[in-house]
Length: 136
Image (cartoon, rainbow, N blue to C red; front, side, top):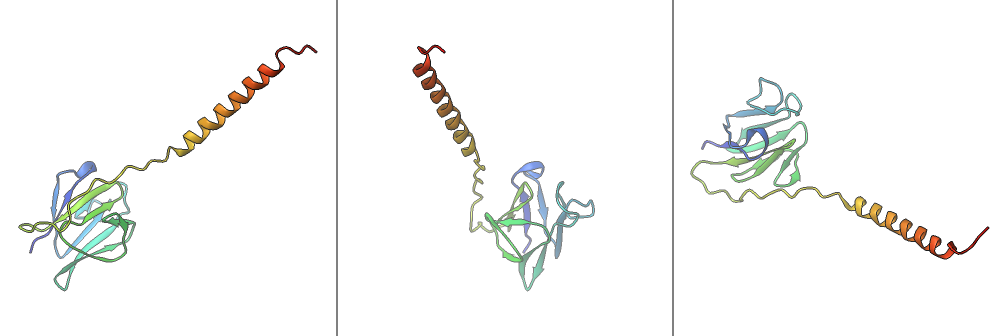
């Protein structure tokens, strides 16, 4: 059975890469799937005992979780750096459907800073109100 990786985000969106016995992924021009910003050889996908196995060298995320060596199946979402890809098996309906990856939200510190600034402004206004009639 022929498997393929299909780009789901970044510069590879919509591009399809058929997988061979060994498919190498990384930033080196000699890789089967070239993705800028990764290590020269970032990961390999191998056919082992009739199954596909991901062997990461750098950080790889499969279905939202950082993965070590792991067996893959049709519909798996793989992320290499900032690029998301979906594993496809032609003719098979994937077990999973590609989900949107939620964006990181790290704006909590901004709300805390705004609260501190407002509290300081309120304290300054209160001090001014209380001391406005006193003369030195």
